[in-house]
Image (cartoon, rainbow over all chains, first blue to last red; front, side):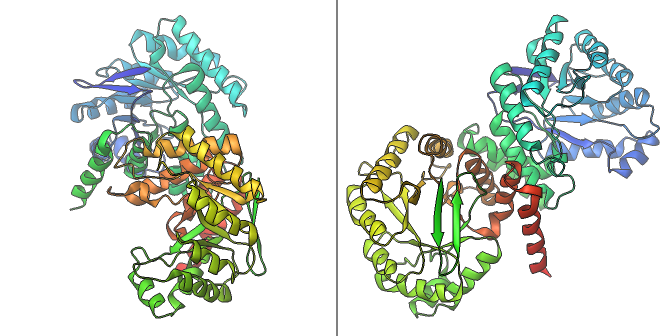
Length: 283
Length: 283
């Protein structure tokens, strides 16, 4: 299954049979005071700097989230996206819980973006899916619904199916639905990662869709978070994750390693190329 | 399936349903000039230091290999084992391609050790298995035979079955056979890791045995070897590896992460305990 995203002049394929595509997570105000400060002043230099450094580190797509307390992201998100797409030519993933922010951004964005996100709640399906259709965007479907977040992977699969069916009914192409299996903190629930990994496998095996995940929170409350996140990332990829939302500065090497191990990197070209480009940046 | 090893006074269980057991690889002269020098002088201080530091870093069992060009390991291996078991109380894994060295060591070793290794070659089966029976040792079975090393995971499984059947016929308990699926360099064969991982899964699913692996060579000839080895380790554990032979200083955190993700570490106790013991050693 191939999901095609586009920037102004570039096309990017997320392929369930291909190597992993990295969606850079760093343009997000959570724990980034400087981003909040600069964005509040409509100063996009720091956001653009985050965009460029993530691309250098291996990001193929950039998630853009400008949510912080008190923000009017229906105004700020499109403004930020316009500033970023003037400077970098990679597809964007527009990230907001506010449908008005998604819509105002869809109106100004170049190419074909990924919407982050819709979920199985009726309200969300009704607000987001028609926009994805109207503006020809791909969309991330979170496997939660009006009943909340289930612990049962089979039920998470059912929610993924529901989102997919609703999207297809509106004329959205199947390959333009990307599923997020939801990753919760393993410190809160010892089965949290197993539930996520099983959901990934089910969505991969039964629906064959591309799968994304923002998984840094699985290690919340624990030490050695980077290593724990790396282990979870590799196992998620093994089970069917194809386009994680992650910090490429920390995780690209492990992602390239997973692709090499899975024989999706001929002659270890991407693995070694990443090493040499990181070495070059050090010097 | 539970393989029980013993040192002088301790018992260790390698359990296919339990957390991973780490066999420390570092008492091995390959690329350790100082070990060759000290062992040649029958000075065991450095070997003992390697033993203790590996236990501190998370090793449950220690592999002991004294093979270097010109060595008489039938004399040196038992001597080294005697010196080590006077100082540390963990089970040992005696590692030599020389059946005479294995036998002379079995005569002096405390408890119940692991023999590294037998393989599917007729000569090896005939030399090693009777000793494992006579001295009540567990034994690692390498999935290669008189035809060499096959690329076909199903054929590797067949060799594992052959080793198991021959062992059981001699009265060795099924659980005392631990399989090594063989890990080769992915730079030489892009499918090398996939073949190993599939073999691990087959041996786990069909035979239910404990599985070991010395896998640092999968990254031979490539940069970022540590990360590549970590990714391969985590995937091997996911597929059924239960007692890797590895450098605990480099890999214990990832192994503990894999156990935590698989819900084999209640309350993240082992994961956090390892972190704090490493922090304590730093200060």
